[in-house]
Image (tube, rainbow, N blue to C red; front, side):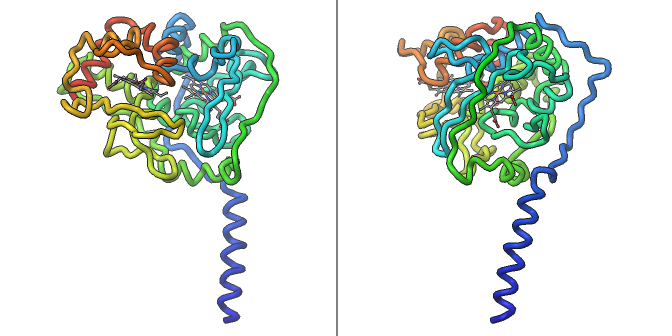
Length: 296
Ligand code: HEC
Ligand code: HEC
């Protein structure tokens, strides 16, 4: 009996120590080197469209300034409000160097060393090439700085605890680099990179476990009700349930203007991503995405 009580005490005590130490218990398995890399803002201006950053970091519905944040993401855990990523020194990310930026984008770690919530899709961005990350940073440095009020997310306990994210990362964060497939065409490989890296399609189109990890065995198979309460279609090449019967031009049209074969337009988060992202892709990149989607 006495032992039982000690045991409980010990468990709580050890639990508390682990909890307090958690933020510092994450080490990335991927270290990038930037020494020989030079970012090109012109290329970055394109990468930002592929990666859909503008859709989340601009509050376009309420007339928010370009990349100044304030876009609200409703989830069962509360509301995430995206931060300002213009180069303003106090409310934005001005003054961050490339390494700090890359750590945020590809490892989900803030300059203070705490974890970002996976509502910032760094899980997919961890697959981005170092050149793309550097180009993106060079472009972000060149946009107009906007000063904003810094607002915190409105999350319910315990989901507002960043420490708990160490556990999430241990369970679900996969930052291993993408493997190319030499048996497939260059377009297919480019498509695989866009879909699984910057395009972060799976972050929405792949179902999640109860705690928000991606069910990798159900890659791109759709979600009946996402955290944002959207119905997200299956975009595997399954003929009946997925997009297997869509023609290349159907898919190209969808990515370019958001129109489905039945004449309806996509809305919600996809509508936003088409408008602020995929609609601006080159025909070659659209074709690459389609090549991969129809053959994977
Ligand atoms: C699906 C929406 C979404 C997309 C797409 C997205 N972000 Fe974010 N981003 C967020 C959220 C939410 C946060 C806040 C995370 C947190 O507080 O833990 C965030 C945080 C950040 C931060 C940290 C800012 C700070 O002040 O600490 C940076 C930098 C950032 N995003 C850059 C980008 C870039 C660059 C892209 C495109 C490659 C991008 N984001 C795409 C939602 C998004
Ligand atoms: C932010 C979440 C999000 C991201 C990221 C996203 N999608 Fe979507 N997608 C949706 C939603 C939601 C719909 C349904 C929209 C509707 O029907 O109004 C959708 C619909 C689609 C459709 C139409 C399918 C059908 O059966 O109607 C295709 C194709 C598609 N997405 C492809 C992609 C590709 C390719 C990517 C990555 C390059 C991508 N999506 C990234 C949320 C997303």
